[in-house]
Image 1 (cartoon, each protein chain N blue to C red):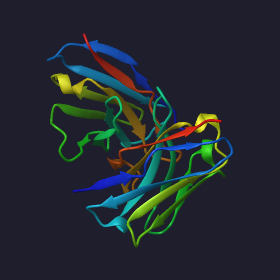
Image 2 (cartoon, rainbow over the protein chains, first blue to last red; image 1 turned 60 degrees about the horizontal axis):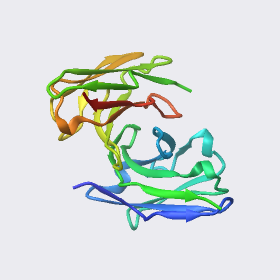
Image 3 (spheres, chains in turn purple, green; image 1 turned 90 degrees about the vertical axis):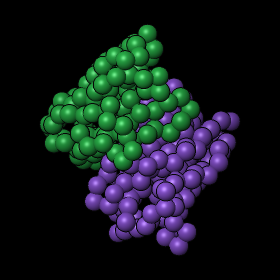
Image 4 (cartoon, helix red, strand yellow; image 1 turned 45 degrees about the horizontal axis):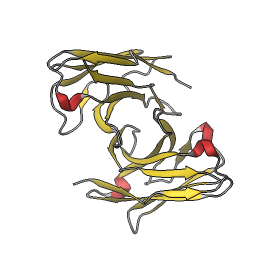
Amino acid sequence: QVQLVQSGAEVKKPGASVKVSCKASGYTFLKFGVGWVRQAPGQGLEWIGWSNTNNGNRNYGQNVQGRLTMTTDASTNTAYMELRSLRSDDTAVYYCARTKVGATDFDYWGQGTLVTVSS
Amino acid sequence: DIQMTQSPSSLSASVGDRVTITCRASQGISNSLAWFQQKPGKAPKSLIYGASNLQSGVPSKFSGSGSGTDFTLTISSLQPEDFATYYCQQYNSFPLTFGGGTKVEIK
């Protein structure tokens, strides 16, 4: 069965960086894209990025443009997101989610990773 | 950017009720509309894609309709496990955008 398993919770200071992993299983990794969505405490869902694992194309949300890098490692079926220059308003649960290549609708989601930014 | 507006933001309903949630896009998105269900402390669950297609394993009490700018999610007979927050999302163009959510509570 399709599974996306994310790395554990992180606590970071303002200005630091965080890297979250998303390990995929149960499907052919390079046939599907990976998106990232975050949810601040008590708030709604915010899309922050999407990566076409097949050709490397990437799109970033405006709120993280220039600070977010998405990468993939096909040898381990793992996607990564690294967010730099962290601010307090980056505190959120970060989710990875699978999309079909050529489309950007999410079908399977990871369990989420809480990133807390606090001095 | 395409703005997605959901209504209502919350509703109270009883078990067995028929519930309809509306999502409006600020410009036409064809049928590039998805719906998600989220329970407290859990990841979102994908319900519908292409405005009206059920994801695998989603029960048929959920249905979606609409095209262009106006969309609806209907739950035909609300059950205890359906009390949750529901989000719509457009994927017609980047940036992908979500509606603000509709919280369905027990009356």
